[in-house]
Amino acid sequence: MGDFDDPDDNSDQTGLKSFSTTSTILEDGDVFQGDKIKPEVMPERARELDAIHSAIEPAGRGENPRNLFIYGKPGQGKTAAVLLKRDQFADFADQEDLNVTIVYIECNSANKSYHVLTTALKKLKGLDRKPRGQTLDNLYSDLFEYMNEHGGTYIYLLDEIDRIKDTSDDELNILYKLPRAYSSEELDDDVGCSVIGISNDRRFKSELSPRIKDALYESEVDFPPYTVDQLTQILYRRAAAGLHDTTLTYDDGEVVGIDSSVVTERVVRTCASSAERERGSARQAIDLLGQAATIAHDERTEAVTVEHVEAAKQEVNKNYIKNMLNDHTADDLLTLCGLLYLEARGETPARTNEIHTYYSTYAKSVDETPLVQRRMRDRLQDLKLTGVINLEKVAGGQRGGERWEGELSIPLDETIDILLSDDSYAPRYGHIAEEIASELR
Image 1 (tube, rainbow, N blue to C red):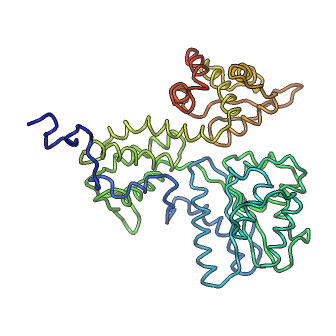
Image 2 (cartoon, one colour):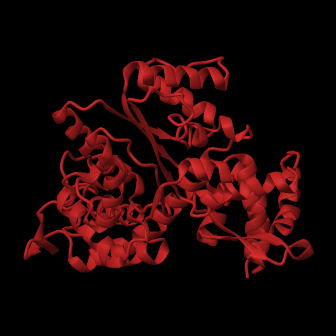
């Protein structure tokens, strides 16, 4: 028998691993692809779903829906919950022949009032591309003209609303203009309008001007981190949907576990416990179980084990961090490097002036002109919004005021390793990462 003729081997005659159209582990791997699959039920967020329901429901009675702000760290089901209620209400509106339009906008890619407006107009009018070359005033006029002409009620879902960074006057800010459109007589009496904002930053409200807060805020709901029991329930449902020979088990109509030949409840709970300790993120828990199942499939084993979960952790953490870093600009990452240096030396939480010192050094090392401290602090705020760092105001600033202090909220070693060895980052940041690694304590 030749070197590659072993019937238990997964290789073909060339020694390469054989492809397969099936898997003994994965029935539908897409179930574990994070945001690719929207949940159909979210019992762990019953209270939060009720709050969203209460904000939207008045539109079904011909009344103006309420403004609502939703807070919570990444991976807590905020967007999934809003879209679940959006889809439910859209079906209801179709059945009842209601004139209600819900517009969902990701502010990560529409981070100024101008971009939110052009995105809204593109979606409402079914345009091939966003309007160009118009002033803010013209865009507002265009939007309100459309709403008056078509009538009905409009609910704007603004995801990552904290990304909207306007330098213009409050009166031109989308967060001021939309909620006041009726009272300022921009909209006809029979046209309704509300805003549901989703934010990763609980401090976002406190940083808004009083005028915007007065115009915008009616009610709010907080999405706390998932508990290990909640994450376990979420993973049970994903396992039943995505793994072979896996079904949910019930007691008095409630899910209490799974019956499976390819994964145990212990393995599922291990994934849930790991994610709960890290960030309480459902997204991370789902990624971890999916990666462990993929490893089990690649090894052609009969079941997913705790060992597969342990092997998956490092890869999932690294991918999680990379996805976070991918959202940031070069200035953001250089600012992060300044904080990483202080973190490696055990000198965090660190003041912004301390971070600025090392940020400036690293910016110059890659031939960039350093931002002034105030501008660099804006970069820290952006890093905070995606969960890369913690940034807090503390007492004790100059003349008895307040100051900002930051510290890392993602694993230090993995972050350094990405900057040091990943092809996307090493050419620019590798030499900085080497210096930071030398300071590890």
